[in-house]
Length: 447
Image 1 (tube, helix red, strand yellow):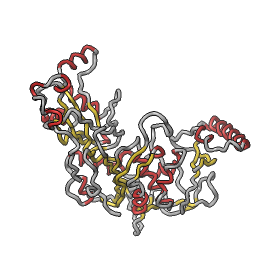
Image 2 (cartoon, helix red, strand yellow):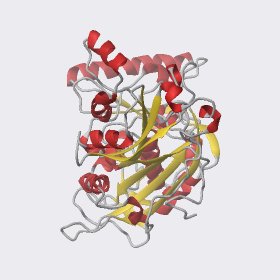
Image 3 (cartoon, one colour):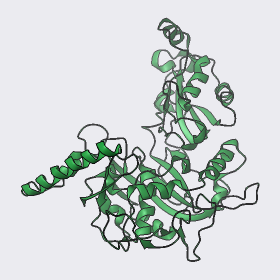
Image 4 (tube, one colour):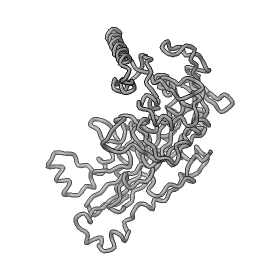
């Protein structure tokens, strides 16, 4: 992998000089002279034109067609009827539709959460009567499973001035905070709110069907039904409680989890709502492209051809290569440092990675939407990792890359080797597991 010298005026991707310098062999000083001369000319052009410039990634891995630029990938992903996906997720949150119906199943895959210690576990409570517990033993912990519509919130994490799921949930839990903490918050001039811990923070626009969070209190008379009613009244139609249960105080929604399941729904129609089947299981974007054509970008190689047609089965083969492997996905992450010695590791173990074609239920107008569903299950996910994986898989499938293309991208030294994140509208956190993962309990089981 290497950085190419091709420059284009584009979207939001910032150019870091150190990434380019790291790819230059220092024993060729004349290369550095040419590089700095090019940078100076580039900056002068920016000043004169008032625009920013960006650098293409020059892929060396073989492919039948040239890969899309970051701008082309961005446009291809966003020129879709995402509102249909938003509406579909909203109906599921309302309880009017069920996600498994998309796959012909009747219920969600049932993973028994035997990894969660129940309140009656003898390991913790056999020697302490409920009414005699004090201090940390008197703390009551509740496990709350939530469903919320991503398009209605600014993500999970509480942020000043934003409508986030965490702020609404914790505000609803304020009435269940014990007296000691209530007084402490009053003395500090802070709002009376509960404190929650979540299995995984979702970004703005990302839906969750079975998000798991926990809340603890020393208040004695709190009932699960009271918590459920309080949260359900906070944002009706957008946020719904699936269940509330009292669990062991050792339960932690994030650290106790053994896997997370995400689903990404990608419309196989363009912004003009036109079907794009070619009759052979391949799909293209007729909004901007409807066939293989010569690249019109002047700074690319002459007669370089690009394809805007991809096969869902090809995407499935690309993703399957990730299964059963512990790999570093730092090239597929965003908003985190690409290379770091401190902080959480970047290795993730992917249990399941598949893609298949499906159809959204018919709308009120009688229209049907063909979609590609991508199901990913792993022990953990990095920031925007799923969205980058989906966008890169589609790009590699359209380019006719080899089936191990995603594995080769793990060895890249610059994140421009992977595609920009696909829109958050298609992403959904389906559930979180606390028992061992069962590969037979998945939506997509095709090989």
